[in-house]
Image 1 (cartoon, rainbow, N blue to C red):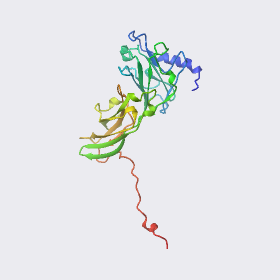
Image 2: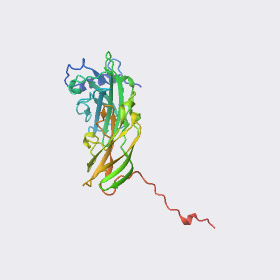
Image 3: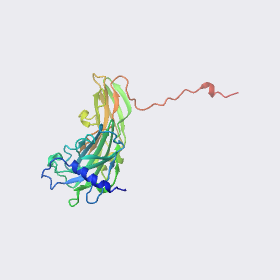
Image 4: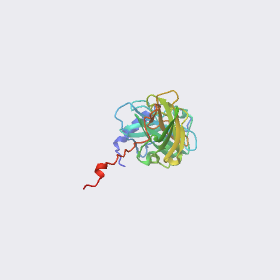
Amino acid sequence: MTKKIVFGAALALLIVGLAAPSALATCGGSKSAGTYNSQTGAYPFWHTTLTLTDTVGVNLVAKVWQVGGNDVTGTCNVRNNPNGNAGILYFAGPGQIGMNVDFSSECVGGGTLCPGGTLAVLATVTRGNKTEFLATQTPETPAGALTFDFSSYGDHNMVSLPRPRVASSSRAGSQINIGVNLDAVAAGLYEGTGPLITGYNILSKLAPTDPGRNASAYDAVPLANAAASGGGPSSSATAVDCTGNLNSRWVVTQLVTANGPSPTVSEATRVSCDPALAEPPGKYKIVPKKNVVNSKSKK
């Protein structure tokens, strides 16, 4: 991968600007994690197809944890737009995302949660009704420029978090029974993070419009959990409740890690609470009747 050295100085200044929150002396001499290594000059990017074209509607959301241990995400995990608050993830250019974490910061684990061993990251980007993500991990290197150095792995491509695909549906009073298929996401799992992904939650919300890509906007109790070790494909049979309401149920996929679920969700599948489902389980191919006249042998 060819890098432009002239970009290094500008990137370093950007990263310094991102580390704005005040620091606490509670995390072993400011442990850090990132995709830019000031000693080697390496700065790979995580690429998204949700290309940045304006300053609104794009969100970067991170989940960070010690493998086999505590969540150390803190409150700096969301960056709402390129000109918004500093976060764990940042925009380095159109479609290019980097990461920078100072674990002595007040807003990362409250400055008190210090990871050790191996650090895992679930990085997501949302725009409109789409979500893309990747997962990666790296071991601790106390003597390096970064305590947790993600710079040596090269560029990675984020992948789409697929929405639930309705394969079957039926109505029983105010309840709509649905069978859903979930596509594999293994292509977005890097550096051996497959075992850290355990499956998918299927969430829903009764609302007139799409609730968005934040998991907190959906009902706290999942409709179902579909096991899928390593991010493989899965399926589930569940039901949505439409009691007393003619709005729609919006059904989404939430990735589940060994340290809990993702804070973001997939594009939504709309299930109407009207007597007719808004989204039938696929497009039915209509087979035309045989043309009796044209089928007769010509004399």
